[in-house]
Length: 166
Image (cartoon, rainbow, N blue to C red):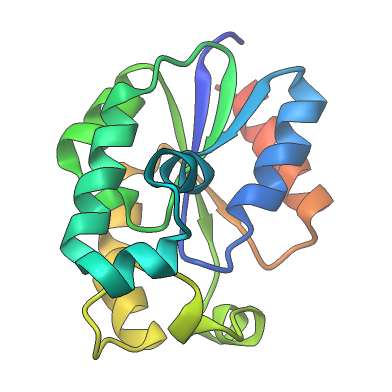
């Protein structure tokens, strides 16, 4: 397998943790698009949101997604990457999109800092609101869906198994 692996999912689903482990297992590079955004903008996600708003953060995220030139890379996207149809189409054309699915209850237990986490959302939206809005988008783009309530190692094993079966 030589294509890229694009990991999508809600905040708290484990995209970065699983991405690093998956890249290590496969001998791939690893990139976290949130880190690229922060390096490019010279600020953390929450500060970008506070200063410029969630639409600006989504626009920066789309620009970053469209600028990526990936080869044999695991990409952990920001949770809001799925709002960019153009970005997701380009990523999917050059890789396999993997959705780390977790129920709202698991995400609530994992995400303790939702208000300060840098989630690109309307200010009044709760984690549940974001979950309900984004879940259909994740499902739309997913080529492989994995239960993210397992341990990170189990998620990586499930992804590897799904990739081998393709």
